[in-house]
Length: 245
Image (tube, rainbow, N blue to C red; front, top):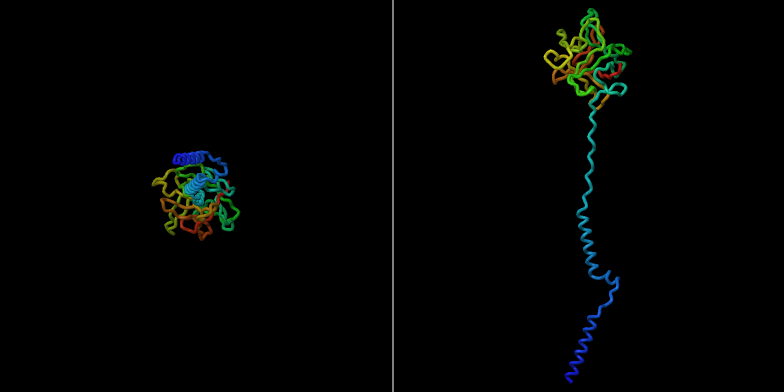
């Protein structure tokens, strides 16, 4: 009896063993929901988190572009004012006289000549040329030291280069003829002028300044007793523009 029981037990054991070793068919849907698939989903979430962490932050807003700095001087046609070319210097407000020209100190003298504004609003004046002391281009630029030269000769046979002379009677510096063109030196200190903006943020209205050194004085009009409009240092600046001759 013991042998039969053992035999039956062995038979049952073999039957269990055969059942355990028989492969169970696994359909693809079962694999899709199997634990490995869940692990893959977890890994995918992890990768997603990782990708989220490495996505760069949105770029900071671009700062506004720096304003363009205009350094050239422009004439009434909108062209750059260039070295050696002839221009009339005219008031922006035409009811305030005409162009820049020459005249003697008073009606009693013929020479020497000074730089004046013609009171006649229709007068263009005498053309001038600009010569920078140390030119870096053909264009005339703001705040550059330059000589200003009338383009025509005069009856007094004076140098056509602008200079500044002190009137001892009035202690006023007036612009006159008789300067020396060339580089800065003790002999030419009174011959240097600059073009500046009349308004700091407006590019097309200008003023002239006398600049013997780093300190400058604006040029304006002094009306004399005889009616002459002399250009001098320290008067309210004359608002000007440049017209091709």
